[in-house]
Length: 132
Length: 132
DNA sequence: CTTTGTGCAAATTCTTTGCACCAAA
DNA sequence: TTTGGTGCAAAGAATTTGCACAAAG
Image (cartoon, rainbow over all chains, first blue to last red; front, side, top):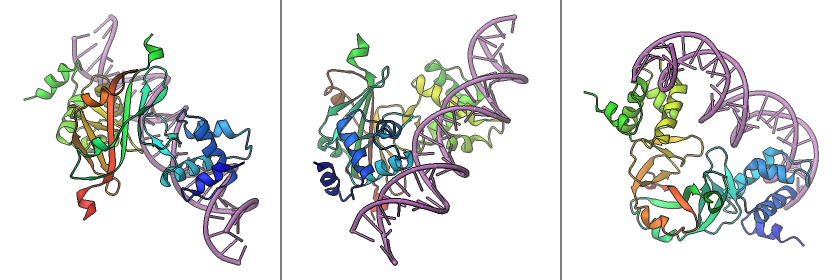
């Protein structure tokens, strides 16, 4: 049965075949995919899907707090369906993006003069696999 | 006299008229400019300057550690001549980017399983001016 | 029926590339 | 005289826009 539909509704997002599929993709592929990767991953399942819809939908998810925009990759926008606050690490060699648990509270306190709404922590370096 | 030339040499960067002007621009305009803004700001001073050279040079500066890439603006790459580790805050309304002093050491310690080389902290919200 | 969502094609924008010329070591 | 730097024009790639049709409330 379809709990993705209910999940989306919880964010105030009207479900549609496309939106459900895209959210399902995000939740089952924790790879921080680009819009293109989402499109490629779903075009067999939904042959009529367009890239425009993927772009629209991912933007919608971010606007409604159902996904996180990940700006760690200078070439493409990436998206994360895992919305608990966390940092991201990207390997400079293989490009792999790793979720890093991180408590944002302590960070926000250092900035009293502005009203911080969103926090993005991007770490770059070499991952374990590439180090060997 | 020209200490920018010596400054660049300190990073292992051969000075040229263009490189000196671009670094001077970065150091005197702490606005985290885009490549285009740097180009626009210098084209009167150096009428023969090309955008290609600005792109090449900014990339070179980042590669040699003479400037920081600022990925807080989803539309454009931005650059910072202030290379002490610090965080960035961007106002969602006016787009103003503010430097935030921040000690990165404590952050890196939370990620033992990977080798972090670069840390980027981006904060977004509403600045004081826009709050009023 | 009236608003919202989708998708095609075209446009836009930022950035990179190929190449020829110029400058410096 | 060889390597490195600049700049033009063109290409490339990611994303957005305009618009017509489809779907849902």
